[in-house]
Length: 176
Image 1 (tube, helix red, strand yellow):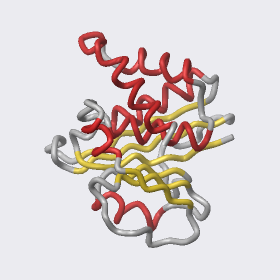
Image 2: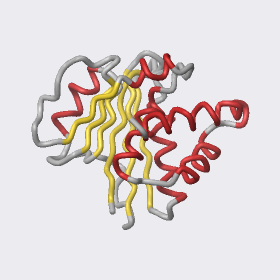
Image 3: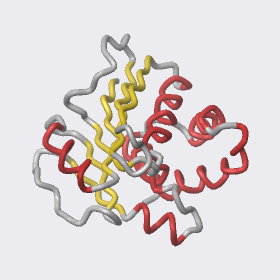
């Protein structure tokens, strides 16, 4: 089993947090992992993405050139990374911010209005976790308890009160 992922969007959308969460999911599942963040100098509002690798084998390089999983949270990221996705890739798109159709027929694309769902459910700012939950639901990447444990590792202690909201967001995406 190996997933080579790119999570991409604007700074402030929780792109790096989602990638870190997915990395902990892999680690808690006993797999080899890599997390490589990338963001512009202004970070919040600038572009941000991260490469995440979860593998049963040792990870040789943290760089993902042809993702087999893409989570796109804004149009510039979708435009940039969709052409790079490997044939057969799983592509998750937040249609709250991306209105164009998939440009490729050789990938499996799931469109979900994650930001709108987050807002409607009192989970503002958690579209990232809704999309991560959808990934978990489509791949069986982890159990609900493993997701909870990964959140405990990822959420800083000063924001511990956000654990249940993040879990709710994950379950929304998983069941979408």
